Length: 498
Image (cartoon, rainbow, N blue to C red; front, side, top):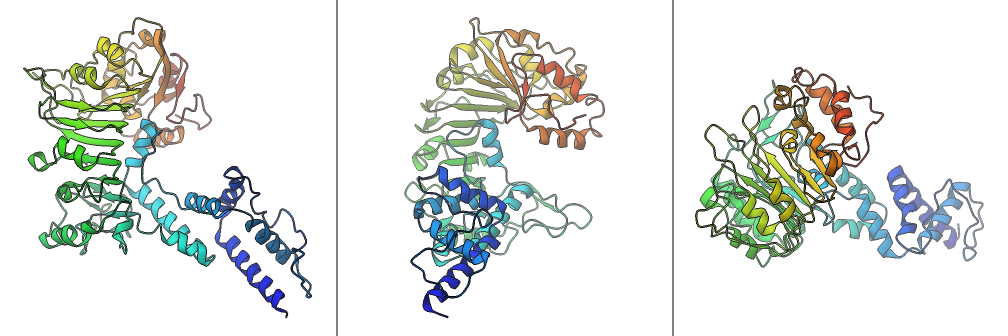
C-alpha cells in the first residue's frame, strides 16, 4: 500500500469513528453549521459519494464508505475551526447559566438542581467524553470544558461531588440545600439511603463535619477562578465566596441571605459581584435604611420575604440602584390572623420603572387570606409592564390601568387547582371577566406536556379541585388573546388532557 493510500485510510478510519460517536442530534448540528458561517458543512455519508480529491492518487479500489469519508474530510477541511468549536460547544451544552434574554419561565428551569438536571449533566459529560476520542484537536478543545459543575456536598468525605480535577474551570457551584432524590438505588449523587423510601437528605440530616467544611474552604474554594459565573445556595460558604478579585465574573447568585446575621449584606454583595445579572435573595426586613443594592447590570431580582411587615416609619427603604432590571419577583407569606398586608408600593415605586415582568408569589398555602396587589401603583410605577404573575384571586381584584393597554398574565398550575380555588368553587366565584379590557394572553408556568404529567400525578391528591381541567382551561382561554403554556403554545392542544 502506498503512502497516499495509508494516509487516506487513516483519515477514513477517523471519520468512521466520528460518525459512530455522533448520534443523529450531532449530525443535525453539523448540518446547522451552515448558519454559523459561509462555508458548506460536511456532507453526511448517505447524502453523496463523490470522487476522492484529485490530489490523492489511490491505486487500490475504494468502497463507497471510504469515498464518502474522503468527501467528509474534504468538506470539513474548509470549515473554520471557530465554527467547529461552536458546534462542539452546542453538542455538550448544559444550562449552567441563565441568558440575558431569558424570560422568567426559562430562568426557573436553569435554577433547578434535581434528579432531572443531574441526569442531563451526566449525559452531556458522556457526549463530551466520546467526542474527545475523535481527534487530538477535539480532545484539546473539549478538555477545556471539564469540571463545569460542582455540588458542595458534606455527605461525601471530600465535601463535594462530582470529583473535580481543575477547580479553576468550575462554572457553577451548587451549595447545600434541601435535596430530595426521587430515584431508587443507585441514587443520582451521594446521599443517605433509606431502602424503604426514596433516598433523601437535607440540611437537618447532612453530617456537618468541621473537617469537611474547613477542607472545602481552605483547599478547594481558593482555587476558583474567573470562569465561575454562578453560585447557588452558598450557605455556610457565603463568606469564603465573597471575593471581588477572583469571582467578580459571577453573574448568577441564588438563595443567599438565608443565614440571618451571618448572611452577606446587600452592600457586600454589590461590591463582590458587580456584574450580577440574576439575584435571588432572602431579605428581612424588606424596608431597611441599611439596604444598598448597586447592581447596574442586574436584569432579574427575586426577593423572598420571611414575614409581613409595615413600611418603615421613617419612609426610608435604603439605596436601590437597578437601572437594567427587567424582571421582579416578590415572594411573601400569606396573611395570617392579625397580619398587616405587605405594602410593596414603596419598593416598586423606587425600582419599577424599567420592569417588564412582575411576579407576586406566596409560599404559605391553604386558606389564609392572600396579599392584595396595589393596582393603581402597578400601572404607574411599572409603565413598561408586559407580564404580570399572580394567583387567580389576586387577579380577580385587579383594576385596569385606565388607558388602552394589553398585559399578559401568568398563573401557576399548582395554584390554579389548589384548595383555595377549590374553596371558590373552582374559579366559578373568581371573576376574571374584569380582565378582558386589558388582558393579553394567559400563561401557565409549565409546558403542556408538563401540565399533563402534573394533572395525572396530582389528580388523586386533589380530587376535590381537579374535576375537569378542560373546563377550567376553556374559561381562561376565553379571556384576552387566549391561554398558552410557558412556551407560548396555544390551547387547545393535542396532548389529551383530563
